[in-house]
Image (cartoon, rainbow over all chains, first blue to last red; front, side, top):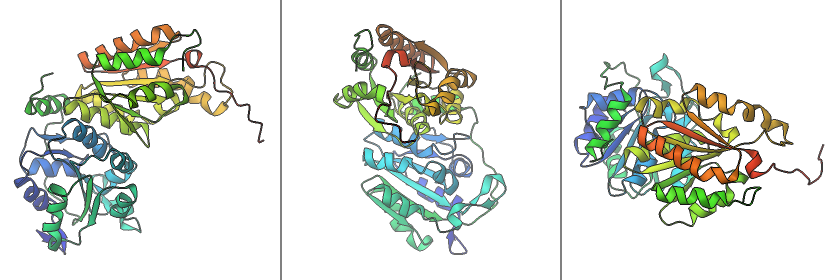
Length: 194
Length: 179
């Protein structure tokens, strides 16, 4: 799953979801949500087409409401930076079932591949460490896959891993953009009616 | 803090939160919310989460609802400016977003920096589709929050109760003028 020593985002996400168990997954606005859809539609996924910066906050509300399940947030570096303050909220809440994966291509892939802030001196894993998350890692690439999986699925949360991904032009695989349908399906998958 | 007429509106709202099984309270605090937040913090059935920005709270309440819990967002009117785009999320997902907003910049405000957002708050919320209830009597706060909660959780919409500065009292600046 390597591309120039970095992860191929589609292969990485598909690999991680193959062994998701009963985990609930939130996909950040844009490519992270398309990655979830490409790995196979699942009603236990939250697919975001908007609300930039909110993926981790949604994950927090969900993790507190569902403490017996692992909650994963897969999002991009730009989406994470917009909501970076939420890492402090998450740390303070000590949501031990929440894990965040930042798919870092150092660019705004959805809007024309403009250079992102993580291309510079900014290190999201260290920001998360400073916010007080229980464990963080900055993966070097596929050689760190096993450690990445442990951090996302096993380590007591809240945790955050940054995975460097290649800037690729993947085919669009789109889940429904009807948020009401998505939300109703998600709640139904957990046994809640509207 | 009781209202100017002596009504203990924070206790009323806390009782409403209990009755409506609100479990998560996201907030960027305000002086006018202090007693209500204290009551919620002391309640084992509730969890108060201090946010860095108010828009986090919109994500929080949406995630809570997806996970089967009810939540609310409490903030000062200046915070409403931080949540507008985020309110697209509950609007599109047809999920509830219950908000309590303590108003600044209206009734006896001495801080000019609070005036622009205070004046814009009702219009901004209504423009993005939030049903607003303005309350200027302490005795009305509890039942208004109950109505806003029933509408939010029952109809899957965003509602906001705007609590007037007339209820909470205007902040005073009597520590001396640094300018």
